[in-house]
Image (cartoon, rainbow, N blue to C red; front, side, top):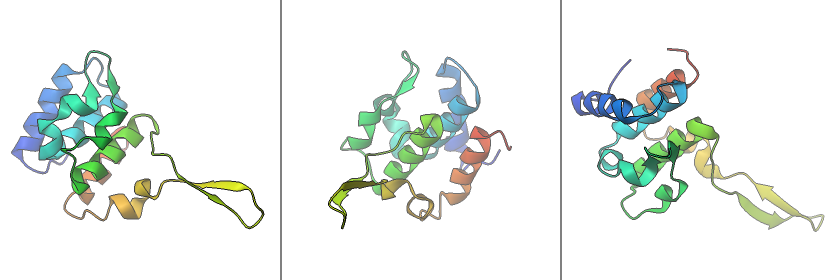
Length: 130
């Protein structure tokens, strides 16, 4: 497993020690939440250790930066397929059509090139490829 820096590795181990389970879902989530300094400082706002679940409203908190939001989105999506609601528009046929949220597309998430290798590592952890 690769780590961004020593703080990432230390935080990952600390988060894992607090989790109720250490399956691929929990480990990939812990890996991503430990990656970003902002998320490490506000982990309780995005994950409930007692209830063992993500806090979707953590995406809308004021502490979030562009990069931490990308990291949170990927972490949540790997956790349970979570994504933001898409956009609704009226098509030429007069019916409402919903487009998926573009915030979860690979080009939106992986454009953060400093974190891209670690995002890929989290995917490998989640799908047990590493």
